[in-house]
Length: 261
Image (tube, rainbow, N blue to C red; front, side, top):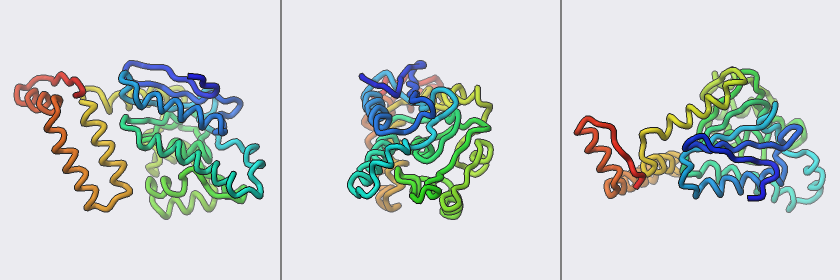
């Protein structure tokens, strides 16, 4: 693939997507396009079972490319398109049928935090800065921030963070549940990799993908519909080789040998 601002490398069954758009890894239209291409490739990559997203250098993603905003003044359609592109990227990440972990190695502001919140889990450096400062620009978060922040930390905390443009460090983010772990900066990627591997090792990807589907899609459904989806996916797994192998291995007191079928 022709990727100018994003690179992909693999650590076993985990692929690492690294944003490399100096000086601050801004989420420009080009970066958004590259990320969508990268995730599109990994979605169908049989060798990739989980994904870690991080940033090169001192930043995770410091936010949207503010210079591009100036081209949208007075142009509703262009501004709408910018938000739509960012939301599509985040939706595609959220809907991946493989676990995605954000390794927040530095500043994750605006679109950067929105990108991280679209991931299933997040690990941050103790001194990383996270926030949605869009109201300081006379704007609001436009890549899903108002919705995902509310779902992750609750309505009251989301209102406080968005309306005050409050920024928190990794330790504070961990305390409020915005990230799952806060570690030293040089341990972020390794911790995220270990977390990603723990989500897939010894498991059948047929059940991993269905569990993710039930959890993520259930957020936007009624309990009744969510339970119906869960029943269907539960029953479908009984038609798979892996479910039979997993149950048989448990009865025989041995480790299962899943074929992801």
